[in-house]
Image 1 (cartoon, rainbow, N blue to C red):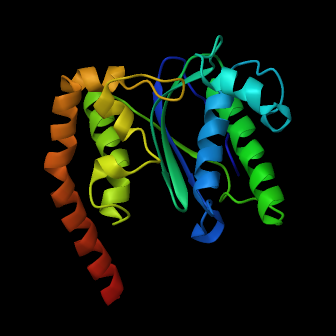
Image 2 (cartoon, one colour):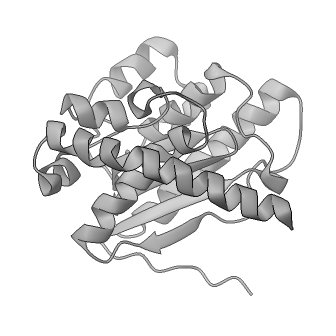
Length: 217
């Protein structure tokens, strides 16, 4: 039986989900950008309308400004070919559940319409893990940002377009990402880069070992 999770205001959660049967949830760059746009749009507690009905000129204005009444705050993210990760702080009561329902339903409708398919593209309900302390938070953010590198999608963590890592390195917040809290826990953007880079090779080696062990059985 599915038990609806209870989310606590001002607490931080690691949210994630993957495609049905581990299938891709993005066909091309347009799909990646659409999910980021969807996340950014539905930060607003009372969006002006559904994303699918907003004209392009109005959408650019919305995405170019801070949410006036955000229900959640995104501290970090990474979109992978068949799954995604979000680090989220709940701002308003019920914010995480409302945000995820609106965003994933919207993206599913878009994806099915564009790719001429039906049914869910995600594997059941999204998963959520409470981040219990700052140490866990900074290591989790590093794990998320290293995902594309560990999976050999890119040669350097900072070259991946579909994560918040570049935002962390620039030190600039945007509507879709607020890196300041985590960066300041480490010290600075430069120190955060070092924190990630120093662990990158080790994380990739561990991933190779795990894959080799799995392939043996």
